[in-house]
Image (tube, rainbow over all chains, first blue to last red):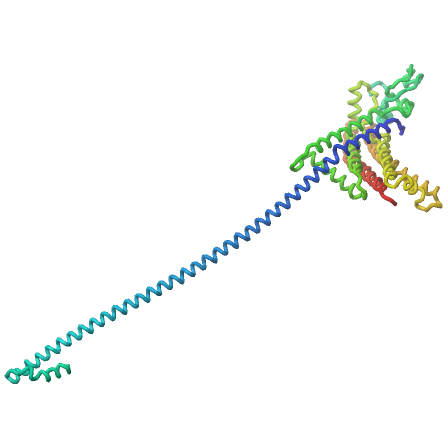
Length: 156
Length: 298
């Protein structure tokens, strides 16, 4: 172990290298690493935010879909109701119409019946007179017995 | 080393443990080959004795050179990553750099109670630089010296490639840390506070001489233990590589020695990876702890 000026040389070299590292290496590297660290942290935060936004949007869209479904159901129900109403109305109309037709027909029948009855009555009167004429062999004064004839035809 | 002198394990070891020293020999100095220096001049030492005789003002060209080279490699690589401002995910080497910086920064933040912009870069420089210097130990012991001897054409060239096996290098580092410890102690507590801490602890003002000795030794032990721990570990590791290498040329038959020695080298190299990283880490952590202590009031 003999010491010589190498000791001083090494000391000076050491100082120069430490100075160089302090000036040109260490701060730049640390700054770079810190920058990257913040960038990564920012990126992670942004990703998280994006995920949150996505979840929110999903929730919103599903709510929107549910609302739409509800509206559609209401509309369908309303349509059903309206449909039922229309059917009911139509039935009602049909019933009324059929009643009217039936009544008309009945009226007509009644009229026909009355007409036939009247005709029958008239014919019966004539027949009765003809019968009586035959029986009496003589002309019967129709006007003299009109009252009786009327009574008979009235009883028919 | 084919210049006719006999190669023994001992000379092999000694040769490998000698630095390549550049220094000035005084006038009239008789060199190892009997040649007498005409007038004092800068030259490379040819023997350990010559290196010693050059005195303090000489330079270990090999370890100093590798140290500067590896430190430059560290600065260059990390600067390139730092300069490139990447917007996306880092890849490959940038990842490794950022991992290291994050690791060092976490340790600094955990230990330091006071923010100091110097400690982070200091710890990073120490950790990476020492790791790189220690890693030179993994390179086969004779490879780089042989290349250097081939290039220079000098078969006797001394060439130590692991800077941290040179106490000059480890003490250079720990001295730097020591200066910072004293600087920040005085800066944070004032001269009075710093001296007070040395003089009035742990036994109060009536035991000042005793306190001074105790605390003074404690203070000096910090750089000494830092430097010696690193030096001792790496020197021992290097020595074991060399000893295993001598096995190859030992009394064992050549191919058995080669296989056995090569296997041992590999096993020790794998084990040594742990020491390489661990010692760099320990040096860094202790530096942070010592500086944290310098910032705190006791």
